[in-house]
Length: 146
Image 1 (cartoon, rainbow, N blue to C red):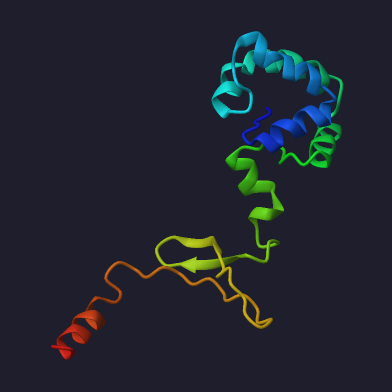
Image 2: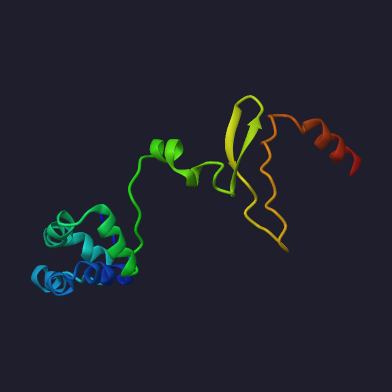
């Protein structure tokens, strides 16, 4: 699947595939402005007909490399289940994530605070409060301020 939203990435698609001239012909033929998302959406079947053979001739790795070299955002597709089960970016291998013990739930993956100042390590994630955990403290605090 290829999704190109910005004009920069649209031009990058043409550059990566070597199909810029053919892609430029689509707009006038279909009377759409390919410099807009709407125009590209309208012409998506024609665009697909032009780029599909190029992608069929290249491995996913080759296509990703060519697109990345042309400045196009690129990434392999995965389901949410694949992300959670097998992508190290969604695990404790990612320094922004840690496991916490969430009362009533068990062990869960949670994000750390994303800010770091002066080279200090990222703060650990903390569990969310249980429902009502701070109610008494808040009531007492409110009564004390009256």
